[in-house]
Image (cartoon, rainbow, N blue to C red):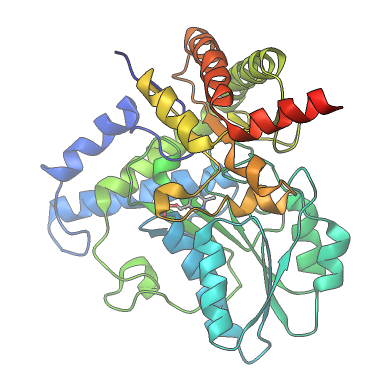
Length: 394
Ligand SMILES: *Cc1c(COP(=O)(O)O)cnc(C)c1O
């Protein structure tokens, strides 16, 4: 059976063009970029070219890009690095309830060390309110961290407006752009972004490589102490192959962004239409327009997302759900709870995240298989039975 991959927000395969580009850096051009011989200067040049590519993709300057080991590290660095550098100025951070755990758990860690964190709520579409943000700002606020686009429901936050508010108040603004980079147009200067996190494996580069943009003129403490790589701010021998891959992948993604996004939007709308028109008692989560082109997140009443995933898997379809059972917890997604879903509905959700490798045929196959799966799960569901009995009673 063919595997159909609809989980591109979890990770993406390394693109062929990217793989070709990085292969020499595992073998022929393997030298440590800090060494003095010729092949080392080839490593150095490749790293600096990639830095240029990443900078260009987000409207930054080359010397504002630092390579890291991924999105989680970039988020940790931005937040802990700011906290360490500015603790004398104040110990208050504003973030949101729907951040990735790389941000949320970092903030919780700081809370244990005497920091005060405001977790802004979101509306039913997953958007923060700019008034809430303004009201949360205090004299001791040193950082605002709001994600660019949400990884579960695809909602795109008003980043330029947030940046403007942060700049007016002289507060650092970090955004976790792991789902947005290469997928949505980003200009860090226009949007007044001070720090921005990127991860390679969400955009066709390998896992274990990422970047943090740090605007020139702002100070954050170093995260990894050691050698002088990345201007001494992030020590450790450079992951040359990963870095080259990130540069190439983000350059390609940005070159193709309009074409990819109109294709993904077409596929996305076909999934949404196909599901909502053929299956009762379901709703689209997230914002209708302010949404990542490849994201669909739908809640189905009366059923469990996990069972849905297992049955889809038996048809060769890889998707994701809104509950965190896979991580050993039965809690429903904090994001779906934050947009106001009841526990049952948050449990019965399905996330489909598309890439340009997906086809109309695959989408139609998903819909064709999903309809009987939902029907079958509902027939076995005590919640659905209760509902039907209730209907009869009325
Ligand atoms: C995947 C993801 C991360 C973590 O990135 P890694 O490179 O896997 O560490 C952080 N934030 C968001 C929004 C993500 O989707």
